[in-house]
Image (cartoon, rainbow, N blue to C red; front, side, top):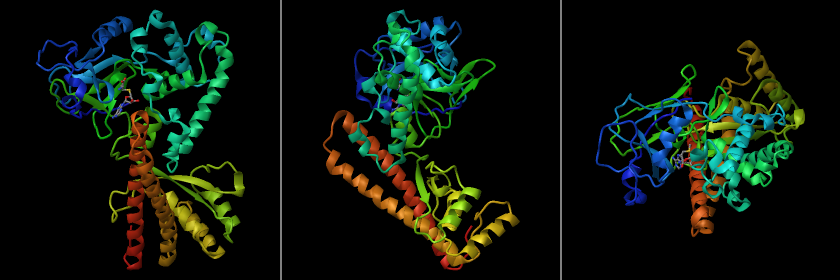
Length: 465
Ligand SMILES: C[S@@+](CC[C@H](N)C(=O)[O-])C[C@H]1O[C@@H](n2cnc3c(N)ncnc32)[C@H](O)[C@@H]1O
């Protein structure tokens, strides 16, 4: 997995950095400097020596554990130059294979890696100070500190009802509950570990895996220390995992002064993913995206023929599970960077779908089938020869986007009066809901501008890409 590095400079701003009891924790470096690394937890100073002993391999780092506005974080503990390896840790540290063999023998083969790793966390937690991973397990966030949408109340979720996050969270909650019910009989054999474990505990462990584990040769791995790095979506620096050497490395993409916070990029994630999997959002996320649902209206005189064609030729897998009698597909659109450019961000498959949906005669649909056969076999991927029909198809999309823009606008507005005076957790979640909705609205507006420009260009008689 590759992730990037960046700094926010938050180190110089956050109020807790002025705390007098901050520890300075410097690793493998003889360079001295005057800044104090803001570490609020006493155990920080023992963490890396412990991890080195525990893993039996060298862990090299010129990063120090501290605290930032994002929680625990890593900071440059000496001058760093772009290209320096700033962290090298053994990977595959805590994996699904760590499930105790006696527990494993009761788990079905269909139990996935996330559930297995969650069970490992629950056991280690239960063991308390006897756990060989205690310093790490104790550092993991507690239930009230996690804000992934699976922990949101029904009222909280209402704030993001317009976004796909709403339904996906409900599906995710149901999925975790299903997993819990399928592992519960196995857990019941080990009351010493799981007697008082509830769905809520399982969900918590599940969320820890979702927000901290990396994909690895073992399926998933928790990599203590590397997982203290926070995320910056625009960072280009990467973390590389070397399967041969069994190490994960972070390479700096720029220079750092001592004390600067080092951020990496977890992935090119939209706020929807950051919110559901990690429990945070970015105020401006270049990877934001929106789901657009498309269906064939029941009243359409060509309903059946369109359904047949859509099922036969096109589109992502239908999302409604109602078989051939309906077509209900979800398409992901991304921000279209330029209203006059190529329109990258609006999938060709969605535009093809719009061409089929807007057809008004059997003849038109037959011509599309013939054209597909004469070309690459894909239906309606080329602009319709009849310009006004091509414009109509895109106006259909434009109307849908326009309606969504109105609905998002109303949702955002409703977050004002209803939630403006909220404090604590609700205020935080409201802010995240706003980040999510405004990002998705921005994507919709960009799509709208592009579609308008496309239609205007065609109306003006110019050829458009
Ligand atoms: C892999 S952990 C990073 C270390 C974490 N801060 C800690 O205290 O252990 C991922 C979690 O850090 C927090 N986080 C990471 N990047 C963030 C960001 N850019 N903004 C807000 N929170 C962030 C979120 O709580 C996320 O679930």
